[in-house]
Image (spheres, rainbow, N blue to C red):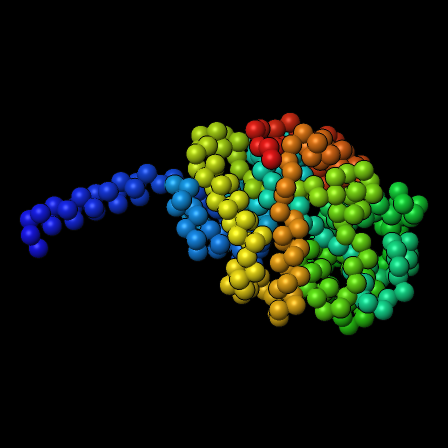
Length: 324
């Protein structure tokens, strides 16, 4: 190597080091098969984080409670959760805040040949419910049944709470008459001939709430967001680019298929379409006011187990300045 080449190589190494040093790192907690992991994979594949001048450091976590604990303990900077949890944390002295991630939500599913034609038909039936008694989809369905049919679902159905995969198996085995489940599992059931009786989004619309209201979002400490605005802006920019790719490219979905848990092409297509429908397109005062109304409705029916002692959405739940 000539002396000139040697010094050129040193200069290039120095430039690379300076670029790496200039990158801003954001630690992101995600679930192995969660939808955030799909987005992070697209970002990594296309170098979208580097284009934004950031480096995403992912941490795989087992479940949503583990992600919430990791954020509160400072092990990660950002997770995905819902604004109900964010508001409760703020009401109890925390400083978390929310940026929309998805409006995709659950659905009520029945077998194709089921005689159940509306929510009133659930009376006396065996209903599987994903999550717990304070799952937001279940609370919304209860509100809808009361408003539209004068029906107290909590008292008039035979409830079984459980994990979505188990509920899907029980429905297929005809040990349940209907399931209220999370959107990825609803999509997979529909791919194999089950029938959507009602989406939670349609139930929200019937209650006077914006039907495509984002319920899950990127959650960070407000203080961290203020101190790391460039990193957060870069992350949000990278996720929007990733969503643009996922909205437009069927080939990209084929590439990430193993991450989605889709068993076949029919499931992948349903997951793809549901994800695309859930990409937030509007976020501003109207959506935030609608969220505040929904919070009050859910607080009324879910009580302190859901929201703690605060019956109104805590100020600062949504990060200031986010509009589109």
